[in-house]
Image 1 (tube, rainbow, N blue to C red):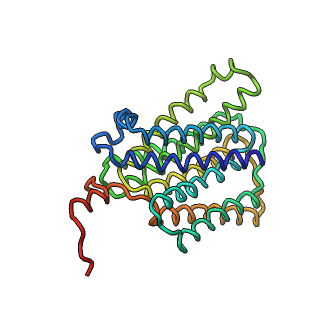
Image 2: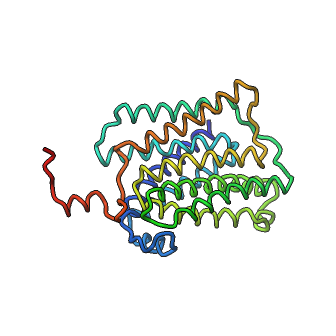
Image 3: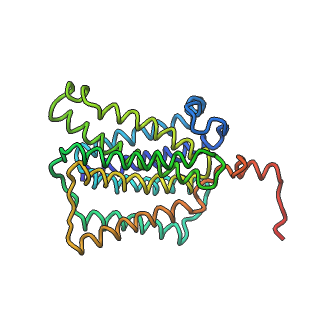
Length: 303
């Protein structure tokens, strides 16, 4: 129950933080796209700093959850951050949930429940073979790098989605390395932790993921980037958890089928919620927001 409470609290902070960050990042100049200047400019925006503060709180709570439970348990629960992002967006826009919103909520919650009940994730012995360890890390980081390379143009239609996917993969990898760092600190102390590479990789991956997320928020609506981010993070975390952290899940045919169905429901629910009208819009392909276009064009007669 402690792991569940910490994970859901982390998801709440992350969801609220993402909405505030996107609201600030969508107003940033496109010349800062994928540049560290973007973070420096956003540091002057109070709402973005509040959003970052909430995200940091979410990461700390997530790290505490990872210290108490397996990555394969924590990651699906962190995916519920989209529910909290939807709640805040709905409050700001006044848009009712409707069948799409309730359907997405049911799919996401049901998918998380199905995966955890069917898989019954549990801890095991971490993999010590360096080849497998680096192979999993290399694949996850390599795919993220490839997606970023294809998303070099801020006005391309798929840019927010690709950057969201890349950031989600990196955050999933970061969560796995956070788990490794926590175990090393608990078992061997601060000296062993500070002389290992994992905590420094966590910082570098976190900053890189932050830049990708803010660039995704800058390039397009939250409904494009956040679902991709939210879907990729638990998938990458589960791959790392099973790949080199030693997490174990049930592998009989029925359990695997329910786990696959649960993961599919999680992704489907994330997509439905992400595309909901309550999710705030961002810049269009020409760099203007919906509010900007309304001010420029004035009201139009729909008849």
